[in-house]
Image 1: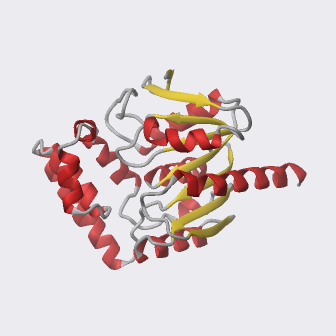
Image 2 (image 1 turned 180 degrees about the horizontal axis):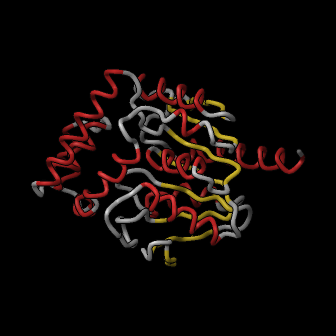
Length: 266
């Protein structure tokens, strides 16, 4: 992987592949560039795909204290590295980061996001507050494995699967990134959709959810699409939070290619 210095001096590890219009993939919680590799390979025939380890993950560095603005700077540094403009696909909290970055002025014309985990509504905000408190309590006492378990259970991973994951080599990598769960938690604020801030998002945006995802996720993505000035919503039949690369790749190729030509023609 190549490395580039972010604004605060943090080294961000990234990988490029393919030849075409730049497209940056932004991963969600506990993910690295390696997790995006299958999707990147499917998109590489049509795009110059950039995947990266968000700060604190994989081969990237970290500098504290955490601030949303630092992650926006990381993404801005990568955009600058691909000639100053790119399209972005953000998965889960990576989608929230992409939207926050564009609202802050990142030069991105096209954004696609998959199920940014906002939890609007009274019960959703209460649930988010409870999870935030538990997460910080666990990490403050050094219970990194407990923090990972909390994240996995909240996102719908069954207890028996979590038990199997604990016995797999992958578990050590997840635990090593446990502290970054507070980064993703901070990105989501209190869990509500920041409609006032997102009113300044000028990019054409595709908000996607899985047809087999929980009702809360499906309703949240529709509310997010309504809050964005230039967004449309799409549901992928049969998909869940565990998004299949082969299901989303043609959707992204169509969106980024068609809308790119439409923008050039206008």
